Image (cartoon, rainbow, N blue to C red; front, side, top):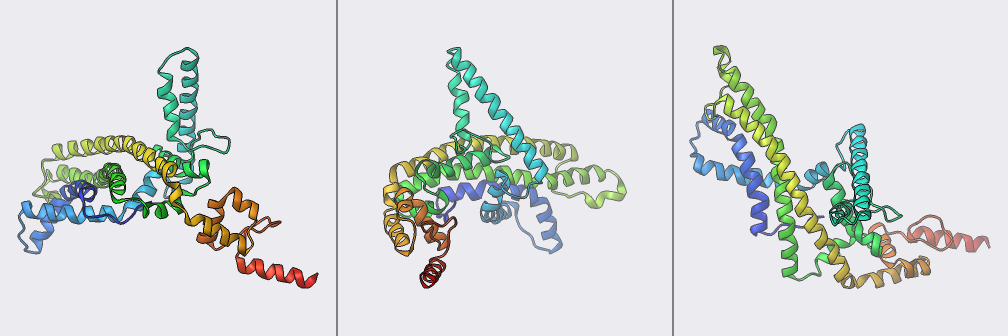
Length: 328
């Protein structure tokens, strides 16, 4: 759930850091292509321009990056299932250890109980692994919090709440999210650069053979250092992902707090629920779950009439009701 980025320090962090990674990885190829085109560009000027361009690409890919890292799509079904099972076992083991430490009076139990906050809750209020990645479960946990507690669908109501917040609070939220985004973008950029650097390393080793010198790029270091760079990038990609999780938790707590403190700003819900009732929605349902009734009408143009097992459009309900009146 993102909004248009402002040209601020947050955007610089989101754009600059991953852009620099990709620009550095691609510069040897860029330099060769420019030389073929007989274009002379100083690296001191070319690298910053390339960093901005690649950073812009990463910012545009925000949603696909999160979808991939959260495990919502593009994962093989069997691997996704195994990953969820693995996280479920880890969660169960952590909870059992927390209970054991609590029974022994060991204060370390709180550290293991806190880990449960990284997972969403099922209908019985117990944490469970809904996603194959820890990032996916952290995001799922704070995005489903408002629905579990207040019946407020965060996906639908978050943009409507966002525009009601004052500028300082929005900046605070954006800065917190920007740190998390920046770390994830850098992890993605490093991961994206790995096959390219691997190809550089292979080409560097092949260049020792006279017949394969075509694959040797002049701006690359020696194949040993290129191979070492590959290993460092792999480790850094993992490290930045792990660090990203900490900031995602911080942002998640702020996200939850917004619905605790500012749900009264969603005053339009009462009017939308009243309209839904006038169109045929069950009145008691609107009293019990006005946020759900309002979201159903505004998002899907559907109502849930009394005595009906499923939802329908107001027009379909009116037609059905009129048909029933004629038959009677």
